Length: 304
Image (cartoon, rainbow, N blue to C red; front, side):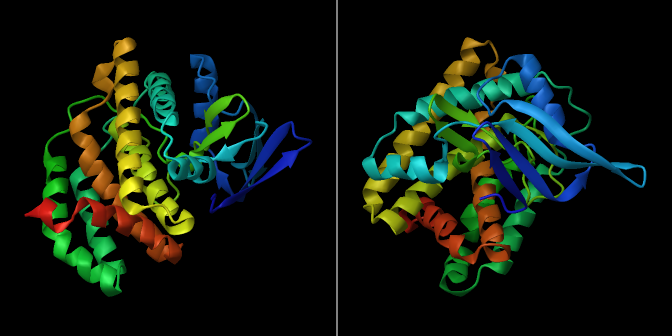
């Protein structure tokens, strides 16, 4: 769900996304839209226009206008259906889509220095998650903190791979399944991380996308009465298929260097901490999803 904006469908031809409140320019989306068009990336809602206004000499972005995608449903609907049915055919398609997106974004200039303080950012997310997660969940999380810290510790090593302009909020809710396939939307960045560098390792997006598949499994368990074991197996198969297709696409385009796979796991762990922070600050009922994933990852037999 978009927490800060609202969208209006006009005559089933265009979607006008109003930013509430308007934001100062420069804003990342118009630049990214223009670049994706130039790069030939078409797996998104066609960008048509950006509406702006001048206020006391300063330009503000009011709205973004994109093409309407018939019969579109976001991943919190269609992917949960697939989880309930045990279907994973979507996973290779999403892997290729994410790879093509990164291949296109990788041709945008990257300002220096980028991706500074990666380890500190992750440790701060864990500390905040521990502070904000109360009750039985908080007590359990505290017992797993040493194991979580060990996984985050690998981020202390220098990042030597390429930094690219990433999507920044790439989860299944940003992937529409529509009449003619799949499309990625919403290039505004992560609304819950105000200081996030727009240029980071591609693994950051990949980790958020794979953890969102884990969240889908938790949604299916809670809302569709899916068997927990079957849901976990579905998530494992889906994420494996997505990653394999993603890496194969990069290799096909002679850019396997775009993914430093060593970063995926610690970024996934950091993402779950951020999901707990988001739940505590904005949507308390969501806490079950990241807690369900963490309880799956850090079972007693997995941390000894």
